[in-house]
Length: 137
Image (tube, rainbow, N blue to C red; front, side):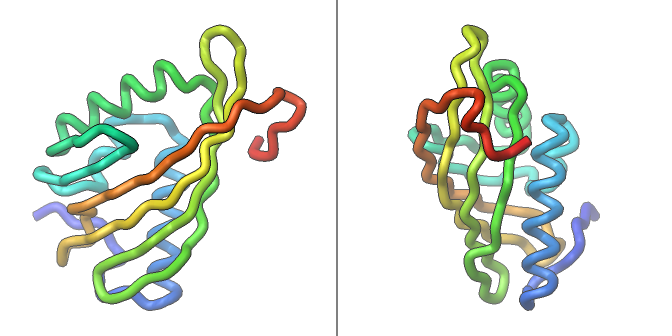
């Protein structure tokens, strides 16, 4: 049985730990590692995309980090209850042409009893920035 502690129900400390673990994992830009935090049948909404299952997550993340170069993410716990966590985040990246962006958003997460994320709903907006205006390094 796959498990990813800490397990729900979350308290402030375990919710904060879960958020930091997600931030650290996503900053590796390793689709295989990141995908293992999700259930095999995870459901995502990411912007206008609907992603179902760990295999689709892996493919999505591979494509994402092939396009979003020098990606760097910061997450912050917004709230938690039982097996759910909400976060706000921002990340920065540039495209192949060297154009920099900062993305802002919110995510709602739902976990199974083994600490794996079974649902992730993300709303994200991108803002063009100058490289010298980067905040996350």
